[in-house]
Image (tube, rainbow, N blue to C red; front, side):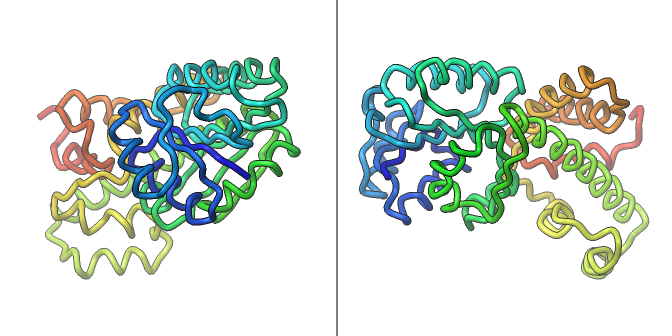
Length: 287
């Protein structure tokens, strides 16, 4: 198999590296050409300069930022990929965007999987991502060798859009956990509790979770090197909010997280890790 990878950011670059380690990667692309050239040289593959450079790829994976980026890449790939090839989108976008991308490619006999991931930069680096897939089972089997290079779990959730719907649920849980952990640790600080005793005690009980384990100590030291940026969380939450409104559910967790991450971004913390949320929790409401 010859595979391509587009979008070489904090998540995409290590994911592409895992594909290369399986000797499946043929070409990489990125909005910033220099980044594609540098990674291509490191991985000993080709750097794409035009969409036609992906011709011949059986699978092309995308890991880009915005809905418009997904649709632009799909439109560029549609004329150059052969029927029977598959585009896999690992971005977090709306269900409607996934369905539009699917329709554009299906018209040319090309498969499409909406396959957002969870696990953050750590998961991408270690190849332990959870991949939630929407689309056709046959297309997934074609793409599976690529996904297995960086996934701990691959689950077909249903038809087109089901992957993005699952990611919406995932982000509600992530945002809610972030809110609870940051608020709880801010309270612990105010009460004068010793972090070196508090964190392992919490982790040993029902309060234990990934965010507390991976971000608890660093946020208490005011270290917010991003694993997942506040700006990206805000973007995801806006998508999730639209999905929740359409579904007609009470979405108080989403509303609070939206307000908080919007405030962080307006404060200039968009590039900081989502654990920077603790800086808001330390301040009394109204101050």
